[in-house]
Amino acid sequence: MTKEAFENKALICFLRLNSLKLKDLQDLIGFCHEDYAVKFLALKSLEIENCPELKGFIHKSMSNDISTDGVLFNKKVTFLNLQKIIVSRLRNVKRMWYNQLCSDFQNLEKLTIADCASLEEVFYLQGLDIEKPYMVCNQLRNVTLGRPSSVEAYLEH
Image (cartoon, rainbow, N blue to C red; front, side, top):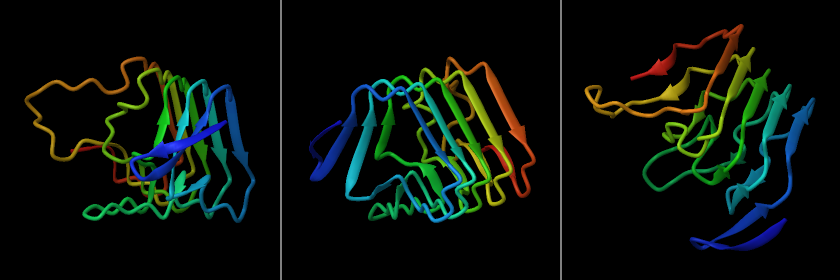
């Protein structure tokens, strides 16, 4: 892990971490505070299960003009080699990512989402020209969506 300056915020780099599992953490509200940006260079597998108070991977993140409350992955977290994401039993997450169109998830092959009570959107495409093609997670081969209690749109436009 290294720490360096990044746009007036501290950048935390995990150089060799291959797998991260956050499971049964009843009081966890975030992996990292908004004062930091986090970059995972080698992470291939991320599992977040039964963390009912989780508000976002980087918590309390607000830009001056756009709220990112309820977004699991905002623009302050980067996964360069992530291949698998499993998310289940998160009750505060409304959107999977903040307007990234999976741009930070180009190697993502498997996405599994289950039992997330507040989840409304998986892919947020609002504001894009529907006449233009967009590449969304070009390696994505397996998507599993299970027991979405209030999902309004998996692909919102």
